[in-house]
Length: 261
Image 1 (tube, rainbow, N blue to C red):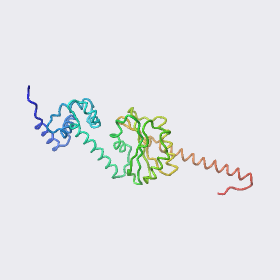
Image 2 (image 1 turned 90 degrees about the vertical axis):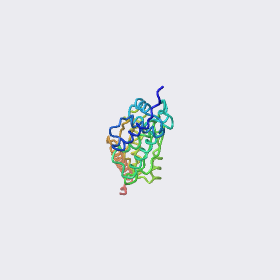
Image 3 (image 1 turned 45 degrees about the vertical axis):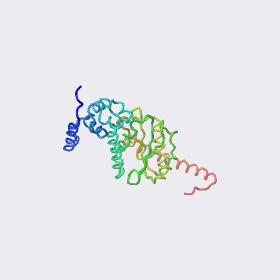
């Protein structure tokens, strides 16, 4: 029976290669091999790394796999998975700090990058609200509902109360579609309109509602719908005021009095 290959020299060459030129020229499985070695430094992880890429298709797929999914590969235990999950968590925290320390709402893509890792594998729909200050910096992120996301499952009153509690000037809503298709449903559109209306009443701006799918997303603001709902609300407000004025004028006309202006 041949002696077990000593991975020390091979791993040393990979590390020296990374120090010289970063990840340029690395195969995806070699990156995963290095990450696996953080938890099991004396074990040859090359075969497990190749199987991980084969199962999860891409480097990103491996990084986003759960610890339980990784351990389904023979030879990967909780210690081996440590490096992968550590890097994923560090990357997520880095994105969070990067997005918090500057005005963040430059694009829906930044919000997608911020939340995709944590929402990709969810089996149910989860609606989150992001509270932002006047510089569009994130102050807090909260879950609003879990399950089917629609108008009946979300209370605009709770949203507004949360915004006031966090001194928010604007809001971004994000929810996932477990099917992977981010196209909005009729209830998604109705909910977004309700939230835009509620924000408009309290003068708290809804910047966007983003639906996360499988490595893609849908932005209501990007499609022009948030602005459309704001205009709809403004038209309803103007129409309501005009109707109220006409009713008041008719009532006063019957008593030969002019309405106060």
